[in-house]
Length: 360
Image (cartoon, rainbow, N blue to C red):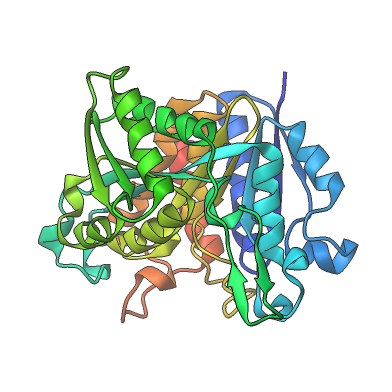
């Protein structure tokens, strides 16, 4: 039976990188004798332009019937003046909510040959291989009330979590740590926030179920410092929504380019949502210079976590590494050099490498 994958190109370079990802998926299916039913749907600013909504109900229905969803990127300055509920980012938050994906996984690793592209010293980057697990459906981003009050002279945002929301993402992080180096770092602000004190209590309660995993607690400001002073000390980090958003973007500098960072958002039984961490980059959209590798690595995560094709996922990751080690660069990775390739050429080189690996 064919596996159904819905592709949401979105806005800006999202449309370009998902076009190449579709080609990758087609190549993989042909090489391994699988059938992927690939469909596309609207989200973000492009959806608003065509339907008046950043997340049409038709898109939601397609995604709910899929085995996995691949997203490009959303947003752009042309929609910045829209009311909040109509902005492209509202579509992204809404699809996460509708798919009930509660754990965002962001692997952060350094790539040989790209360490000089990072602002950190190369000696700090040796051995960096961490996974940030961010809670995705609670906290400040979703708490109510969220409003201007006192005739617009004050504002309120609500940080709200239930025990069940915290437990499910922390349990996911423990299970992921068991498959890695068995070290879990829980990040909070328990010296100030009641929500963080509850978070820390739950981590300690669940730790008894995972005696093989070493657990430590780090305050978020300290975690931010350690990410740039001793990043190789981390294995799996788990934290709430806003902290995870900030820390994972900070950690992006370790790789040398945000164009190398994939992500997965997974839940309990429904389709996973996979997307590159980078944005829609409207300044380079349509110029053919976008880096497709974060999207290719997101495809690898999709194959591993949603389609149970872990060996194929590993071959894609190896192909990305192989092309990088050959010295091939997109513009964002080239630094001051003028020796770089565009989106389609990088895609072609990686896809050919993948085909060679899968057809051995």
